[in-house]
Amino acid sequence: MNDYAFLVPLPVVVPLFGAGLALALYRRPRLQRIISVVSLSIVLVVAATLLVLADDGPLVVDIGGWAAPVGIDLVADRLSALMLTVSAAVTLCVQLYSLAQGEADGDEAAPVSIYHPTYLILTAGVANAFLSGDLFNIYVGFEILLAASYVLLTLGGTGERIRAGSIYVVVALLSSLLFLVAIAMIYAATGTVNLAQLAERLPEIDADVRLLLQAMLLLAFGIKAAIFPLSAWLPDSYPTAPAPVTAVFAGLLTKVGVYAIIRTQTLLFPEGRMDDVLMWAALATMVVGILGAVAQDDLKRLLSFTLVSHIGYMIFGISLASETGWAAAIYYVAHHIIVQTGLFLVAGLIERRGGSTSLDSLGGLAKAAPVLGILFFVPAMNLGGIPPLSGFLGKVGLMQAGVQDGSGLALTLVVGGVLTSLLTLYALIKAWNKAFWQTPPEPLPDTHLPKGMVGSAAALVVLGLTLTVAAGPLYGYAERASAALADRSVYVQAVLPDGSRGSGESVDATREDESVDPALEEDG
Image (cartoon, rainbow, N blue to C red; front, side, top):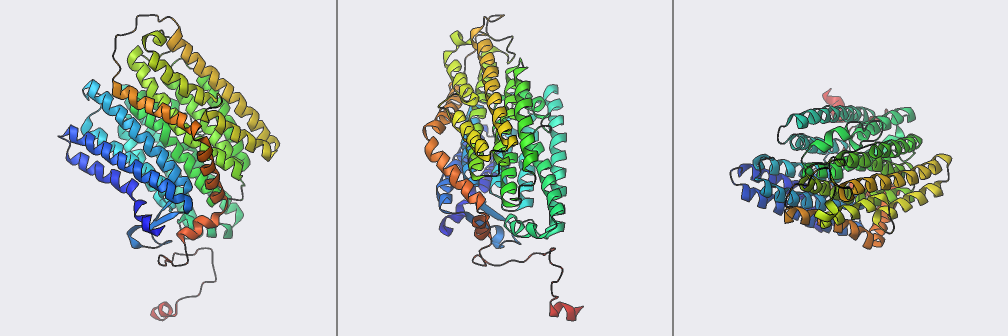
């Protein structure tokens, strides 16, 4: 396994190198596009390779040659490798979509010299957050992707985008501040921020202090993941951005927060003292989010509320604190990244063909653009949970885990999940009927859809169907990832293998009876 450890940093290093090169070639937009696509393609190949290799055990790299726990580690285990692979596929498809859109529009809406380096930096931040074995380095990954997202969200400089970006910036800075305070408190209590060492030291500190630290992390990650009641910012921020930006935000940014919750809940706080709180939050997120979606008459806002709602399914699986629940949550995260991103890309195509995303202004698209109708219908049914699609399989896994739990709250969540799925189907069918079947109030603009945009959106729709065809192997992989999360020693021993990669020391704040080094005592 160590022979392939050199691959682990590449999903972070390659996009950063590509971003620098693209920025240096800001006068050569064609070369920028080539660099961007090549960089993202390399990341996808590396991520898929890590997905296979990590199935035999975690791959660990000590950054700068400093061994854990002093040094920073990048760790590719089953969970991080799966998230990395799905995110790499999505970012590549979205980039191809944006290139086709830029070529059709003459790159007037998104300055290429800024867009490509920023997009690659965003990709590097996401990869760093997924791979990091250090709590502070996860924070760094968040800040990298958030800094890039500020730029992408306000591309074009319109008043509407600036206002939406301002809300996003304020909320993101608040969550980052909470995360940073939580990290400082954790270091003060344990003397380390290395995840593997925290897994060993956190059980040694006072239980109430541990609960406070857990609550602080959940609060910070809950804002980033858009968990109710910390989700009000999302529907106002995402719909104003360009279609490719909205799509990649919807697919990835909230999932990085969900990933952080999975990682910390399973590795650092396995006792589950906050599980009931997470269950209530999951139920509220599902129900409130989907009620918001039902009330919308704008397609992008409707999809934004469904995004919030379906975050609740993932939190539901995490809160069950069982291997069955975690496996279903992991599968559902992978499914949702692809399907939700695809729907937002198709929404961009609908806006381009129909001239608006207002459902009251659309109509007649089934006749005018039948391929577009298929591209919307398939992922919409997938998100709604129609069998035998991947959305149905993920929800069935979550419902089974809830029934196995058997508690009243878990069963209430099962009922809430079924209700949410039915309302999701209702909201999406309403959108389908208005956009594609009703008579348009005004004639549709005679607009040509670029083949590159249609092809990129179609690729994600097909990838979503592939999750159904390959549901058995993928769900099996998720179950193995869940088993590894349950056995924390797998992760800890991979990162802290008793000196096989070197040795490091860090302050142990939990031990009051430490002996003083005689040499230091004499110097004093």
